[in-house]
Image (cartoon, rainbow over all chains, first blue to last red; front, side, top):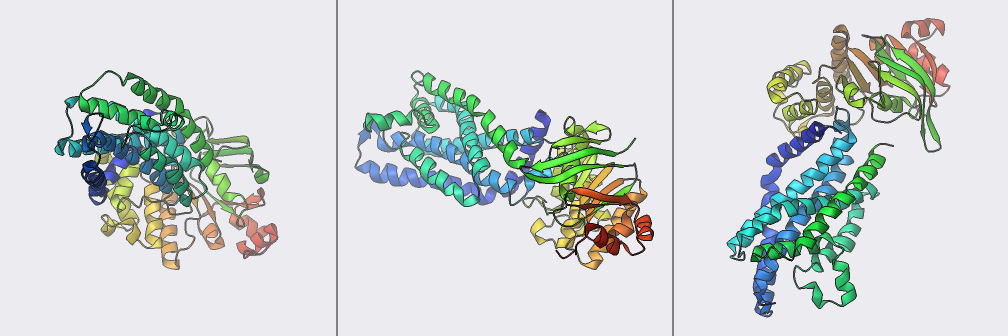
Length: 251
Length: 243
C-alpha cells in the first residue's frame, strides 16, 4: 500500500469538503444544541443532578461523543456507499495509480478526521454553554480519532454488505439508535439492569462518553481502560473493512 | 515490445464464463478495436487490462508488466475512458481534471496548464467553472476523454467512447481520437458502431460469448467476406445486433 495514494484520496475529500461545508456545517451545530436545550434545560429542570453533577453538565460531554460518532458514521455509510455505487467515484479513482486498499484507507481516515472536526466543534459549543470544567477535555481529541476509526470501520463493513442504500435504515435503527440511547449520554448505564448495562461495555460509544466526561471534569485516572479498549478495537477491526470492500468492489 | 499482450485469458464470475481462452497483442501506436454483442466479454477484457479485475487464468501484460503484480505502475501510464459517466459530481469541470491529475501525483502547478490545454482540445474551455450536472451527454464524454489524458498516457482504453452520442458529438470524439493516433498513442476501444471501427481501427477483434472469433484489419475482413463490416460482424457472431 502506498501512503501517497491514500493521501491523494484524502485530498480529494478535503477539496470537496471545503467546497460544500457551508451547506452542511450549520446542521452539525444545530442538532447538539437542540439536545442540550431540550434535554439539558427542559428535562434537566426535573432531574436535579446525576452523581452531584447538574443534568445539562452531565450530558454535555456525551453530546461531544455522539456528534463525533455520527460524523464518521454518515461518512462511511451513505457517503462511502454513494461514492462506490451511484457516483462511481471509486471506479474513476481505481483507474489511476491508486489501489483499492489505499482508497479504503483514505475513506476510513477521512471519516476519523471528520469525527475529530465535529468533536472539536461541539466541544466549543459545550464550552460556550459553560459546561466544561477542565482544559483536559482537549486530550480527548486523539481518543475521538481512534473511536471515529471504529465507527468508520463498522460503517464501512455495513456499506460493503448492504444490498441497497435503503438497508442502512436497519443499521441506524437497530445499531446506532440503541448505541446513542444506552451508552451513558443521558443517564449512567449503571442504572439499567445488570445484563443490559453489561452490553454497553461492548459498544465503542460507551467508552468514548466515559472518556469525554472524565476529561471534561478534569479527571484523568479511571478512563485508562476505556482508552485501551478503543485503541485495541480500532486496530483489531481494521482488516475487516479492507477485506469486505475488496470483495465488494473487485469481483 | 507489444504494448498489450494477452495470453490464454480466462475470466469466470462464479459459474459464468465471461471470457474464455482469449489471446491477442497490441503493437505501439496501433488502434485496436473490440466488436461484439452485449455480454460478449469485451468490457471484462478491458477491465482486466486496466488492472481493475484480476484474471481467473492466463497472463495479461501491459508495457511488459504483469497486471496482477504491478497495477500501479501500469495505471500511471494508461488512460481509461469507461462506459458510464463517473465524473466527480462534487467538483466542477476544471476541478475534475485537477483532482484527477493529483491521483497521478501531478500537482496543480503542473496540471493546471495541461488541464486548460485539454479543455481546449475537447472544446470545453468555456465550461471550466461549470458544474458537472449542467453538462450535456456529449460534453461529459469529451470531459472524460480529457480526464483520461491528464497523465499523457501511452495507452488509452476506451469502452464504447461514443455510445449514446448524437452524430456531431460522435464525430467530434472520432476527430480527437484520430489526433491521438496521429501522436502515436496506442488505442484500445470497444464499440457497437461498425463505422467507428472502420474509421479508427487498424485491427479489430470480433468477440462472441467470451471468445475471439477473428482478428484482422477491417479491410481484410471486408474483402475476405465480401461485404461491409456490419455484414461480416453479423455473419461471424451469428445473430442480429438488436438481440
